[in-house]
Length: 497
Image (tube, rainbow, N blue to C red; front, side, top):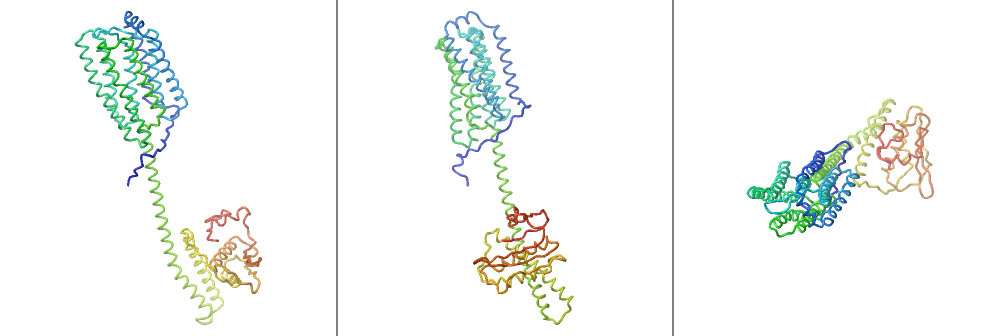
């Protein structure tokens, strides 16, 4: 069932590092665009109309209309440049680079206009002047803006190229419609330009909508909606300003000021919002989706492993329960033979029977250890509190383990006669002592192994001492960890607690 609050989640986007030797193709294209803008600006400067340029210079407040916006554009360019220097994330580097590209071209256009170096020609069809460099700047910057929006959408390459191509046709045809002397040709070019405008706007709307629908953070969703309204509103202001200027409703100074304000709001605020907002590009969303899938797979694998472990435990429990019955039968039969239920027997036969009994007891102890380990994992191991004859218990352990020591190693019992009874779990005490004695027999090659008990106030102390290699003091606590090997020897560490 879907979580109704899922849109509140805000996974941090996985960061892609930008390799030092790798330059994305779109970054190279933008660099080529900057060079193309410079070459086109130099060529257009030869087309300037000195009389119209001088007229515009006298009517327009160049400091507020050109110099101040150029300064703002250049400041934004420097900030984007600094972001590029310190940014190692591929997607944010792209956003910073294209923001810097848009801002430096806009700053160059305004600065050249301030220096009276922007080519202004007369548009005879409508009787107004036309800033050629502004159209050139639009032709190089607006495709970059469309590309930045496409980074957040899942639009195909064909859709992006068609939108960029329509944008360029719109600007070029608008420029031709503004400067051509023939009214029919001018009207045809303007018709083409206005026909392209709805398609370009609709493609931007679709790209924004794709980014919004893929956003899982409510704050980012609201920010993208506001950015969409803000961006498209200023795009719509350009044809309105052009129509008002062509109809003679605006003075040259007012028209230039409105172009500048629309350019500034449509470029600086747009690119800055994308760069410093927490928006996710398509590549970042893909990485997040891959991370979610990997996490889901990891959880599935963990669950499968848990199921396999549970199946293994069930198999081991079933197997150990099945082994206990025949083992108890073997031990019981050998004890019966040893006490003479089938008549007298030779000493060699008795020795073999005792070996069979000891081996059966060791195997039964191992089976019991496995059952206890399973109980410990499930947290259901029960410790009984009962009256225990420790003296008999220690003697029984030494008798059971008498065949375990190596040749030349003596197994001794050192417990005072008539040792007081204690309270505890007899089965666990036997299990623990059997494991300790078995471990001592394994690592003692000469000397003796002694199982003893003594009183320490109200408590009883049981010990197993040997003359073997011993355990370092800093490793004493490690022996209680499951499957821990202190000396690096291959051995099983059974339950000792």
